[in-house]
Amino acid sequence: MTLSTRTHIRFRLNDRTVTLNTLRPTETLLDFLRLERRLTGTKEGCAEGDCGACTVLVGRLNRDGVLVYETVTSCIRFVASLDGCHVVTIEHLKGKDGTLHPVQQAMVDHHGSQCGFCTPGIVMALYALWMRDAQPSRSTIEKALQGNLCRCTGYEPIVRAAEAMAEISQATSDPLQAERDDVRCQLAEWQTAETVDMGEGADRLILPANIDDLAQSFAANPKATIVAGSTDVGLWVTKQMRPIGPLIFVKQVEGLDAIEETVDGIRIGTTASYTDASAILSETYPAMRAYFDRIGGDQVRNMGTIGGNVANGSPIGDTPPPLIALGATVTLNQAGTRRTMPLEAFFIDYGKQDRQPGEFVERIDVPKLRNNEIFAVYKISKRRDEDISALAGAFKLTIEADRITDARIAFGGIAATPKRARHVEAALIGRDWSIETIDAALPAFESDYQPLSDWRASSDYRMLTAKNLLRRFFLEQQGETASLKRFAAVEA
Image (cartoon, rainbow, N blue to C red; front, top):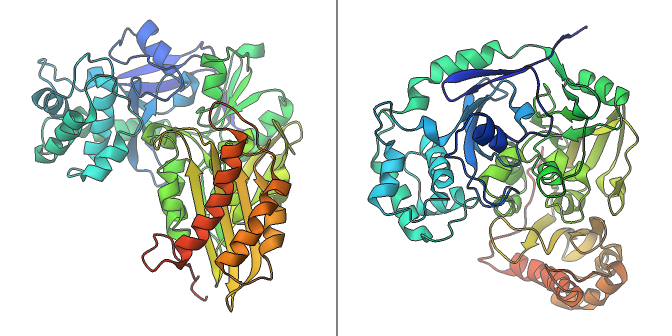
């Protein structure tokens, strides 16, 4: 099937349609809003997606055709990735007569702002929360604010403002409620099987329409940079000033974001976001629920993709340790030819993965837990919320008649790649499930890892913590009130 090609992108910005025939592939949404459209309510704070001052909403039609709005950090979101979306900035909330939106008014009434620099981003985060949960609990509010840093006000007045939102009827004058049908129709009209191809050389950007189109485009341009959620690639531009063009954007590729339950487990398309995948992964692997809440804030979880986290190959990526421990496989696609390998084999060395020119990660398959298998994953970081891992450890053991018959243990942030602790595994298999066995296996960590010291943690701290996490895993599994207990899969 031959796809039509267009040489422009289009999206809705507040209440107007934007069509761009020329565009730098690496132009960020924040720069476009502030410099091109003079929408200066959106602020630049960190330029790396951490502080939330640049938060805006992006509306899109999900796989079921439902219009959803999500917070994103515009400082690392590329404009080209917004084709077919609705971008909403703080300016769109205020009424035409100048009246504040009820969420804004709640911030005023409860003194949720001092210098005001972070306030627009906080309002957008609370607005997104208000749209999906009219009466949020305090814990839900705190989770919604994970990606927003307030530098002077303190969070208590902001939380009180968020709690007051429960008194605001969603039937009140609200732009996104009033125009929802119009937006949905417009975005649906734009859902056409077309390839976008703009620019030349390093300034070329390509938005493939489907997986086959992506495979062909990348095979023809193997030196191009693939961009999914841009939560890491965005920093290559804003912090490292790296030339990364041409760019192939994949978040819009039809079918590449699929998440499905198979006979053997869960299949995750490479562009499935953390937000989209968290529900099914948390239900299938309960230990993942709390872990997912430690990955960035809502803005990062909405943008970032599991496949991108894997494909990037970072030794501190959050998802590889639990996926490796669970026995996940990765499927690569090169011009339509696919190959599958164990995920741990994909990581060769620091910054090097087993991926050929023109080959991309298409999906990840994660086996279900079987009877007598127990699983847990932990993240250690300086800051609890929205922080880089000092290390992350994942454990999956098979226990039969109080003996360990199989073990898979993986760590990130402790070696040049996400890596299994094979000596520790060997020290556990065939032995009693007891604290004595755990203690006897601890010295084997030093045969598996030689951690480095950096600003996140010293080598001694990493080694001691890795050992302590194995002990914690055992003690939590044994405790009657432990948050993580043995998970027994239901017999088919």
